[in-house]
Length: 539
Image (cartoon, rainbow, N blue to C red; front, side, top):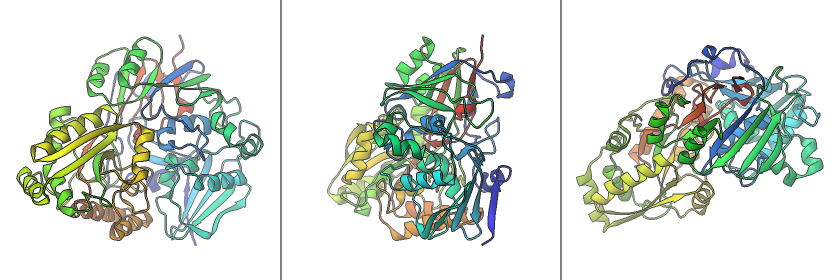
């Protein structure tokens, strides 16, 4: 098989946003800051305290070992700081040209048939305990990651040859079916984060949950689960002159309002994932702060559990579509600042198409007819307890009640939300569906594939469309297959889609860094900040 080589300079074009897709960074806006070049030359030294919402990224109850962490998609910021990553999602300074680039890897090669991925590592990288990050270490980590229970592990259908060490710096993995989007999934999955095999074997998994040993820009000083993570510069980091910061602290905090106040009080210098719209408007008018609104990649979706009542009846699903007016919600609650999508793509990601052929229209009269035909409809609608989500859920409750649907709304913590999904008895959930590449991370398969515990449907035809789209090496063919998948979801009334929202990052003046003060499409709600390159102006 002739491989498709994707070295550092070519990987960008091979996985860049296709012409038929979205703009990859055009959906956000930064205020109170210029480009990275306007900030001048990066300066070394200083400390940074970064706040993370306790309801999402500020929760890491099982620790930060990639194989035992249960909330990996939420903890990407911490993982990158500790482990670095084989591959990263990068953009140009203006947020355009989003692409996957090798980081600790030198290159990635996908065979012409899409059945084999070969990764070559950069020479000389060491874990912070002095042991080598080589092909044996990658094989150890991949096998360990795939055996984990974390939802952040990729779905790799391994061929009998599985994962093989080709030479000291080269490792390959073979699949039973083509996996053309495999590289796009790395930055959001646990196979990207390499932990020291020696440290795991000598200290054990419990120790690694608290003080993991990686090869990233920082090493762990202190880890109080779901509270505080203190890191210091890795003096042996493979990128010369990096990281810029001497010390990096992640602090969990109880939401947007206290985070905003802490920044103004000088208790922290950055906050990831602001979702409260009134606070966003305040921050944008505050000259103490830089505000970076990231380009949306994941529209909200009302997931309907078709495996249980009432949504195993298509009439109940059709009633939800007919009763839902996301355009009114987007305009009435958020002043039209978030575009409405009829499918699982958004302006910051690939294959963006805002409209889907055959998408059911808002029709409250039809919804009332269906509710009467069903003899009534009672629904529990849940979501993660974030500002925009709870506001949308309250609006949906009002719209649905107007057509006779009895609605109970529930706000969940991240852990409880996971338990609700895995329990299988949930009815409806307002979630996000999509990713920069629909086949990666919390993408379309995460919400709609039969094999996902976070899916509400089990439909072989849907599975086949998603499998074919993820397998194709032709970007135009992928775009067409995802278009068909969006139409199929609408045709079967599986899940109404809504506004394409993305959170904002806040930073005090004088802080700079990719993904923090520049636009990078979100990986799993929040963007992938490259903490190696974050720096503070020194007085």
